[in-house]
Every structure is written in structure tokens, then in C-alpha cells.
Amino acid sequence: MSQCPEVRTVLIHGKALEGDLIARIQPVLNLLEARRINRFLTEAYAELLTENGLDWAAMGMRVHQTDTAPTPDMVLSLGGDGTVLETASMAGAEAIPVLGINTGRLGFLAHVPLEEAESLLEGILSGGYTVEERNMLSVEFPGLGLEAEGVALNEVTVHRRDVASMIRISVHRDGTFINRYWADGLIVSTATGSTAYSLSCGGPIVHPASDAIVLNPIAPHNLNDRPLVIPADGTLEIVAEGRDDHLMVTLDTRSHKVAVPARFLVRRAGRPFLLVQLPGGDFIETVRRKLHLGLDGREGPSSAGSHEINSDLR
Image (cartoon, rainbow, N blue to C red; front, side, top):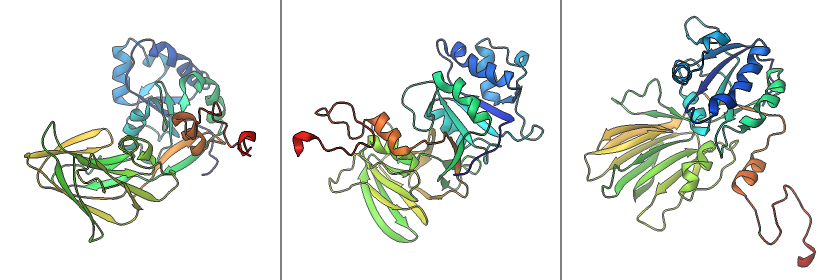
């Protein structure tokens, strides 16, 4: 991590605008305008704001054109973790730190609550933030056209379509055989993605600073198949076969229908994802708070970092 300079230009991206969300994000937009921050919108978000009746041009915001506009100092992601994931593959934003402002519920990447964003942004815009580098995965799948968007921050998944029978997935790492899974699918997760889909399938929580990948089968037929944590370096060759003519390969939120047998490579991406963090932010504390790690009904709410011994256990 490193202390960062003052923010002068931002690129704003967002997703759904249900209910009163326009009114709820308005203070954030007003603050940026009051601070005379250069404000750009992604084309998709500009269209969404227009559809919801917000005259963003009158507020001095413009659509970002990568070939003519200045490079933003920061991307503001308004939404949930899925919105942050979209920025990971966003063209023109590859080396720009992303701040996730959470307009929904549980969020590990979008960790700044919208209700606190206005007050927190004052310090962030003045340079009161750090940037954390997160490993990403890159996928090489000939003929699938993934060259521009073939990266994933959370996970790469191969899985069956609809209600077809289970599929067979063979995995090699740098030519060495790892395993052959009979399952509904396989999740190849980064450390960041360990708290996402992989966790819901029984995978371990891995600290995002860990240089590791999790191989996690989805509903494996063999009960002795368990999630496996391996080093992030090296190249995984994955071959998936099944009775159906097609399978699905998913990179974060982007799904692709592929013919069987599906053969592709997964390796650590050549660039990290840059995630804005507030000073003093701690992953373990976030996990404890959001997932109730260590919560024991016998002792009441979990107290972070408490090392006191319960008198009843002495």
C-alpha cells in the first residue's frame, strides 16, 4: 500500500437506480461539484442517469472518451460488489484505483456505505486513502474473443448449462496433473473472490494479500473432493467435457456459452486490480463484521480483537 495524491478527476460508474437511489446519491454528486472535481461518466452510466431523469450535463459532468479525456485519478463505483467487478475489465480504466461506494447490502469490494460516503469523501479526495493491489486472473480461450475482457477479479467458473448431467473437468498446472472432477462445475477463485461464489460452495476464506488461487468444485460427485489452495503463479490448463453440446464459462459476471470439449488456460493476470482502501481498514475485521466470524451466542456480539479469557472458563 502507498499514500496517494489528491484527487482532481474522477470517473463515475454505476448500475441499477431503483427506488430513491437518485436522491440518495445526489449528496455525493453535489460534493464532487462543490469541490470542483472534474467528473466523467461511463457511457452506460450516463444513459442510465438520463433514463432516470437526471440532467448530468447541467451539473457539469461529461461522458468519458478514453482517446480525448484526461486519465481519471480514481473510479467511483456506485453499486455493489458486482458493479466494482465491472470496472475490473473496463477499457481505459486498467491502472486507475477504484473506490466502491455501496448502495446495497453486503459488500467486500464496495465497502464504503453510501450513507457515509459524503463525509468520507472529504478526506479521500484530499489524499486520505491507500491503494491495495489485488491479483486478477486472465483467461486464454481461443476463438472466444476474450482478448479485451479476459480478466476476472473474483473467479473464473466452468459449469453445466440448465439441468444437464454433471460434467468432467480435468485440471493440470504447468503440465502436472492436479485432479479430475465429476461435478456441476469448477470455480477457480482469486484470494479476493474467496469470499464470493467460492465461499458459498464451501471454500475457505483467503486473505486478499495471499498469492494464492482456490480450486473449488461445485457439488462434486466424489465426497473426498475438497477445495484446494495452490500458488497463484503457473498456468492452469482446464478441459471440461459433458453430455451436453455446450457448457458455460463465466468470468466474474460475464458468461460465455462454449462448445464441448472446452479447453482453456487460466493464469494470474499481468496487472493487478487497484482497490481504494480507507486508512486503518482491515480485511479480518471486515470479515468478522460482515460474516459474523467468531460470533458466539454464549458471549454476545463478537468483540474485535478481545483477548480476555471468559471467567467461566478459567
